[in-house]
Image 1 (cartoon, helix red, strand yellow):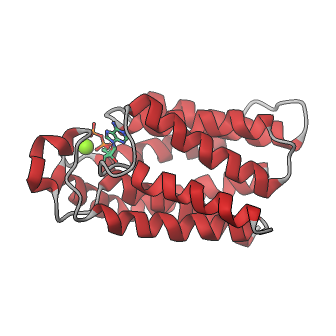
Image 2 (image 1 turned 30 degrees about the horizontal axis):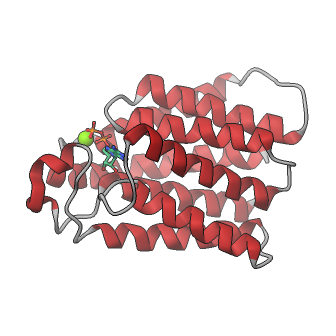
Length: 215
Ligand code: ADP
Ligand code: MG
């Protein structure tokens, strides 16, 4: 699990970097135009931390995986800034705690992590789905992942369901009027553009599904 997570974070960095201009353009339309730059900085710092080598932890595989997520969360909080740094950082820290508390079965751990991430963002951001934020990708992803798990799905099925639901969630943000974050300052003018944070959340979940499928 730990290796897959490290592979995911490296793949995420590559894709965030490639799509930083697009994320920034989305944030130019409804925010301040820094979302791609912010995340690119954060994931570059995560990869630098992985390259430097994380402090080894004792314990089961789930503890090692949790340590990777915790390091990523802390790095995002300290390097990204803006709204998305603390929000994504919290998502990773909550996911880390959920993985640490799991029995180590990968599909169940993934679902618990997604649910914890989504609820951590909602609590910190005082936000709920439908407000044109990253939650419009994360919450449907967690719900779809839970359904896939309950239908007997393995980790690839769970992550595939999360990825597809997140993509649909991004599309669903286009007509929404933002009521949280900077985009809310635009009021009705925020409608007609996808939310940058929902777009990056879907990008990260697609990279996770791809990294797990390649493992
Ligand atoms: P900033 O808005 O400070 O410039 P970013 O541009 O990096 O930060 O991130 C903007 C994204 O953060 C938005 O597209 C949205 O998805 C997310 N976001 C902002 N505020 C909230 C909130 N209260 N709850 C959930 N997500 C939020
Ligand atoms: Mg911004």
